[in-house]
Image (tube, rainbow, N blue to C red):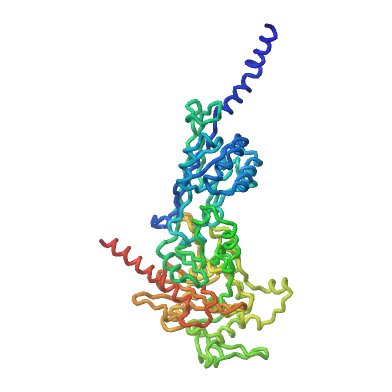
Length: 564
């Protein structure tokens, strides 16, 4: 009796708490309730990303032995090779996870019904209804929105303490990645009671559930109508990019990179072959050309050279030697794009006619130091600070650049730099901000994608409003009578500048920058159409025209609605 009493004392008093905890761990099953992910909407409330329903088949790792024995039956139900399914179960077991793990995601309703019907024959397996990210517009703005992917073991080890569970999805690209903390919300938990056979009986009333907190939705600066118009203008085969911003505040109205991809693919189980083809596609559909690709700006830099000249002793009426189709310098002949030449031009006329010979002479006289100072003021060679990862800075050639690269620099190098060739490299987003600064006569913004969250614009120092006026008049002439006449839209004053980006790997790229309306501009745009050569009219110009048609139509509808 004494021995029994001592033993009971040990069990009930000394170790009672431990045994009660072990009993609860056996009796209760902890279930994670995934928080609804926030939606992603355009500036007018149109949906880019939302949550749908999905069915999953789960496995309880604590019942691994029973699950392993029922694998052949499960394999026959789902049509999965038994050997591969056994390996998958073993992989889950090796991860030492103690909560149910999704064995099959995105299961169809037929499989869900079979699992429920044969539950007694499939111990350790269960089904659940959970969320699946849905992108109703498919490929539209895919590089901006991004996609989700399941966290792997290494990520789970790092993120488990932050409320993630193994197999949960996390943002992998675009805004889904950049604003993961905002969108994901906070997962909840509930506890289910189990009997001695480990069967789920009901939700526990003893332990109060912790409800999930939904993620916050993102309202974007993007206008879906403009985005759609621009992407449709590119078509199915043309490569390139476009960025349109509001130059007054930096709101990005459209950001296009072609080719694009369908983020819905990542919400389903993809075959290894499909993953391979997507990531190794030579057209690079996952590469965001708007912020990650760099291009020689070509003649779109002639307004920059003009600004440098205007701030360093030259004026609108400055004329140089007449253009006869080429310019002799240092024993070489530098050609103008117009074989017969442009004759004698002042500065705004030189911008309108895109005369190489005029800007060869202006660039040489200004010099690289003054030229690169103006370029830096205009944001060239620096990242813009957009709220997307992966942005590159491009390249602004300076004297230090040539010294560090052991490249020879002579004053003749400035001739190529002045017309946007040579070692110049910019991103489309940089060009969009650059033309936005011109449009507003000196307001520099931080391009951003979340409505109402952009940094405060600032007015640049070092370039006068009068200098901007000269350049803007020249750019207005480009659309009214110059190389972008095909962009003319009746009733609207649009300014712009065409350019050609030399491509050593094939046909040249066509570039266009522009802004509208000419007075009190509300949109600035930069576009590149790759490998177009010298086809006329410029494909970049026609893409911008298609988008601006939509922009002006939308503005007229809003104005009419306001008047009513």
